Image (cartoon, rainbow, N blue to C red; front, side):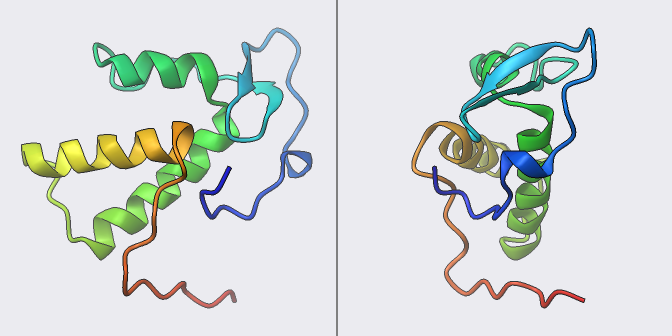
Length: 109
């Protein structure tokens, strides 16, 4: 599934005993699930809770920060919120969220 993370499931810690488990749609592997539903009350929030691991969610948060900065989004507007939700749906359940057209990845230190 294309979403530009470069991470592999083997890079993540084992699931702690008693932790909630999900079959992660991003990594196609059973992993530790989120502790709570993101965007409670929105259907995508429940879908993410049931199908996305904590590790995949962390990658999304970093991707979302990049989107917010590159597009200069104000999440106080309905348009920006809808854009982020659309990108989140694509990131986890679609073809992957696209990078902004002029995006240049920061150099690693």
